[in-house]
Amino acid sequence: MIVLGDQLDEQASAFDGFDAAQDAVWMAEVAEESTHVWSTKPRIAVFLGAMRHFRETLVARGVTVHYLALSDPANPGTLQAALTDAIARLHPQALGMTAPGDWRVLHALRDVARHHQLPLHLSDDRHFFSTVREFADHARTHRPLRMEYWYREMRQRFGILMEQGKPVGGRWNFDTDNRKSFGKAGPKDVPPPTRFAPDDITTGVITEVNTRFAEHPGSLASFAWPMIRPQALQALQDFVSQRLPGFGTHQDAMWTHEPWLYHSHLSSSLNLKLLTAREVVQAAVDAWQSGHAPLASVEGFVRQILGWREYVRGVYWTQMPGYVDRNELQATRDLPAFYWTGDTDMACLRAAIGQTLEHGYAHHIQRLMVTGLYAMMLGVRPRDVHEWYLAVYVDAVEWVEMPNTIGMSQYADGGLMGSKPYVATGRYIDRMSNYCKGCRFDPGVSTGARACPFTTLYWDFLLRHESRLQSNERMKMPLKHLDRLDAEQRDAVRMQAEMHRVSVGASSRDG
Image 1 (tube, rainbow, N blue to C red):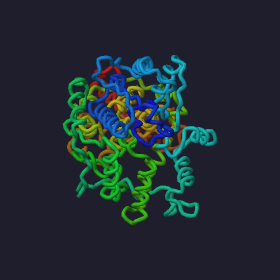
Image 2: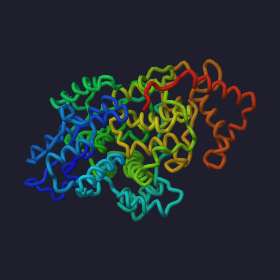
Image 3: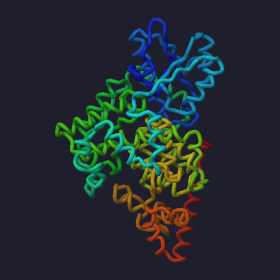
Image 4: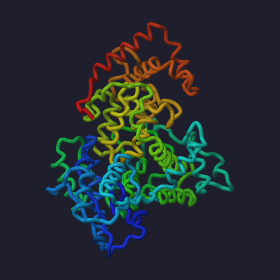
């Protein structure tokens, strides 16, 4: 049985009927998974550490595990070649696995099985509420496809936060109660994140990553992510008891030197399959039912898991393989080099990227409305932006990261993931954070020496895509504001934007 690095669950569907007397597990660490995108050290360490711990868990159960380590001299470096070698050595009668979450990996493994004339049995991934087939059925009958309708369907189907067929509280979402800033005083009494000191296995991984992948970006100095299911369960319990009550109110807020805030930090455990979506959602719902957490916070969190997470998976599998090359806005510029270093005068980007490189983590607004927003308005190739996100975050697996980047962040799919481009001036960041207070740029200025690049690029974005966006109902107000700019102001914005693009240059990475 094949177990991939994001399938680390003893109860996975592929183990149904597993006979330890005659069946065996095959796992492989291969350099390709860290180099097909230039992965950061925290991302590499999360996968290697969790895989090695899972191997020990299986061995302790008496399961035969054929495990290929990175350090093995015979390691060919790719999953496809490693499986080919294993088949030649082990002579299996058949291959089985839980369905992969990555299109590239699925087709690589299928090619190997076909070449060796071996059956490859795929079982549904039970870590999701829905199957890809169910999403495809939904997509055929819902045009335009929107997450909100899928989310409501899932709520009704599974009876989550429902009473007598209606949403509890009389509303499907509580956005008006959520997503507030911290105000000038900033966050107060933020509960500490749940972190886990590296054990011997994890310490060995850290040493190996720092040596083998020394040229890769990122730091492992503060590495303390959950590596095993008991740790993931503790992280879930701590989130629900300590941070969920304040999650909704401040889920979109940002603050300098406060990377963790009220967020769950569970996405890496979910995507490694150390936790299931069902148990995470149930824990949040239980907190509301017991009176521990307000409905607005719980609904906001449930929406992320039951709504967005399931939705992006469906979009990925129904739109691949062409989805990765979607480029609705015809963006062609290189990713700026500072995305790999955080070395920029823009305080918001410096904070979000610096935090990302240090921890392998940034919350959804830092991704969508700081790093993603800037790249879209700058005009960076969407595929390059996608590969950066896939490379830098510990929770990044392609099925969830690609639609969020290509679609939601970059609007490269033309509205499949989001009904409009998520564009904003620097004033949005100023309202939701304290980043602008220490920045040399003024978020209220679009031209001149103090011009905020976000504000300049916002107006330039609308100018460049005005005709394309005129038919979008949700863009009518921004375009109405654009009409107020006279010819001289428009020229000044265009010139300022081009000066900025020249100043940031191109990425030192080729992808």
